[in-house]
Length: 326
Image 1 (tube, rainbow, N blue to C red):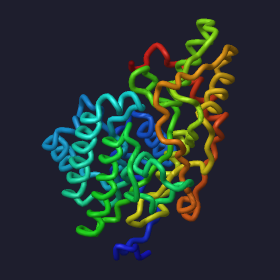
Image 2: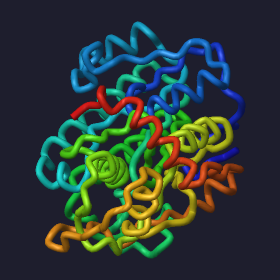
Image 3: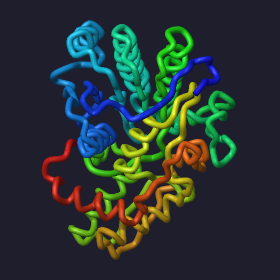
Image 4: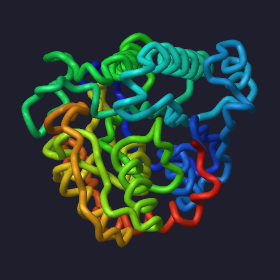
């Protein structure tokens, strides 16, 4: 394959005995990727918790890469949060994520890591991008103000990967997932994204017998949701089947209103009360549906339905509710 940046590389099956570093292996996406790689037979997976390796500490990151010398890296580590967290702490989301990305990518380049997969977010695209959102919509319009700092950090990561391809000839790639959910998500009231927040809210209401659940906004924005296990499968597929400078959207290709997903969550957890909407709170982007035709061309489609994924996630949440962060 000859990529548009002139890089010549032919993707193929990864060496199951090579050192493979998953940055952020305890998080929602990273833990799913770890499980998928284990199932695929990778025997030398390495990961470090934030207490073992602070990815914002440049010297520590370089020392780690020099010692371990991984052949493959998935960069799934990031500071993440929902609308409230992003709106309240934009400096933290920009500064922390920029430092994590720059340190890991620079350190990986210093030891010539063969394949890096950088994971971004669909919030990199303009607020009013044409739907479904194609990869070439990047940098064509204004971002959603409630998470623009986080989005800018992720855009910088994409450009960093593209720059490494141009300057050093390493076949690194980027993937942009839609809204993800599943085991090991953040269910805290202050830091969670919309779906785990809804699961926690409706489950607590069902358990307490509350008659009403109140959600933010109008319920009319449309969102696409992908189970983390599907995302992990897509990541391994891309590493073995795709090479190119442009980021690849990863999603299901279909979306649902926030009100619609709230209704499904209520049904799954057994909440039979009423749902009200606090329209004084922000909605965020009106619609975020990814065009996943590039991913389909690479030979991958999602397989976990929203209903099945929600059932799995609610089961996991109820098993771990007493030990969750926040």
